[in-house]
Each structure stands twice: as structure tokens, then as C-alpha cells.
Image (cartoon, rainbow, N blue to C red; front, side, top):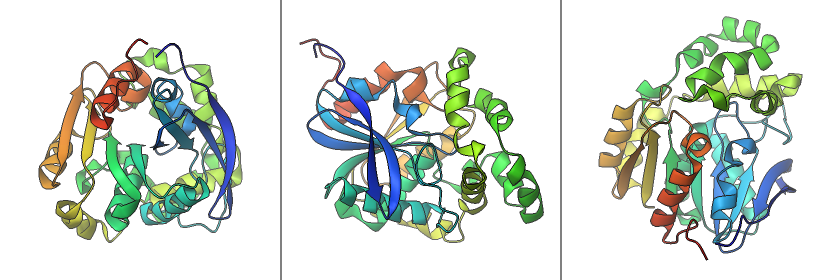
Length: 282
């Protein structure tokens, strides 16, 4: 690699929704999916490392970042997975590698279970894969009266409150990061989307989904920061034992978002998993 490949903002219409994304590179397609309360900004340090060997796509989910924020939308993982299939169609992709961080990993996993023909390989980064992985904030937001009370109050303060749990190195929490991750919360529609996701992410069918892990077809790499304070390590280990082709990689000295704290280490792990090395000098 002689230098970082160009990754630039773009727009697509997926499932009838105007979708913001970061896109660039050439080669086999890889889709990067952000977590709850985040956006495509989560991948800003990783995409240039992968783009020399892969065509990379990092969308803002509906309701997040700069994408459309419809009030009448299914903000469950199943609904977001259906939208993800429409996003693949909009990008002209029959099949792709999916890389999902936290909630994005759960959505990618749901698509891999429901439509395995669309997913060639699956990378989960700090993804919730068990009933025990729900953060405390989710239990609060699932109480209808309290959720409705808090929803209009969501804003930059909430991002500032939650962000320290996601990073081992607090220097990552910059004003730019707080601005980007507060973007959706600046509008009533965005606050509703984020709150609705929290209310509905633990769906009644989750026990049945967990039972289907043994049927998962694509190979899986599970990456977990060894100081992840959001999702426990035990569930990742159990998941990788349950799936037919699962591997767990623990990255030292980082928290819930290794792609932001240790992008070079994540890039190297992806290179090995995908079969090419984006960090090799050329």
C-alpha cells in the first residue's frame, strides 16, 4: 500500500430512504455497520486502511447520523436487517462481507441468519449476542412511561454521559466525536429513532434467534476489546463455540470500540480473515 485510499461521503436510496454513507476503494465489497447511538463516523480511522484492497461502504442506519429518520419504521434488529438487504440491493451487491460494531453486529448477524446467501463472511465487533448483554440503559428505556419521559430530553449530554463507558482511552472523546454522535439527537425524529431502537432491540423472538446460532453458515470473526465495559466477554466465547465457524480475537488495551481505539490492529485482523493485508508496504 502506497498511501491511504480515498473514502468519501456519498448518498444512496435504500428501501425508499435517503441514506448517507462513506464509500471508497476497489475490490471485494465490505459493509461496515455502526452501533447504537453512533454513525458511519465510527469507521473513519479504519476505512482508509481497508480501501486499497476492498470496496468499502459505511452507511448511517435509518434514524441515525445524516440518513432519513422516518417515524413509521421498524427499528428492531429484524427491521434494520431488512433495510440492510435493501441497502445491498441499492449498491448493486448480491453478496458482501459484513462488519458490524455492537448493534451493527447484531443487525448483521440477523441478516446472516435470515438471508445467508447475502453474507460471505461476518465480523462482529463487541456485538451483543445473548440476553445478558443488554446495557443498563436499555432496561431503563424499555419501561414505557420512563422512556416516553426521557425521549424528548435526549441530546449531547446523553452522548457525553455514555461515551466514557465505550472507550478505555478517554482521549478519544473529543468535541468532534460528541458532535457527530449527537447529530441524530438534534431532531425530534432522530430522538424518536434512537429511543425506539432501545425500546425494541430486545425482541420477543431473541431466544429463538439464539437457538439458530448453530445453523449460521458464514464464517465469523468476533473481535472484542479486552476492556469492553459494555458487552461481556463470556457471551462472545459462548457464541464462538455455538456457531459452526467462529473465531474469537481479544484485542488488548481497548474498550467497546476497537475500530476507533486500535484501527491498525482491527485492520490487520480483517486482512487475515479476508485473506489480504491492507497494511503491507507497496
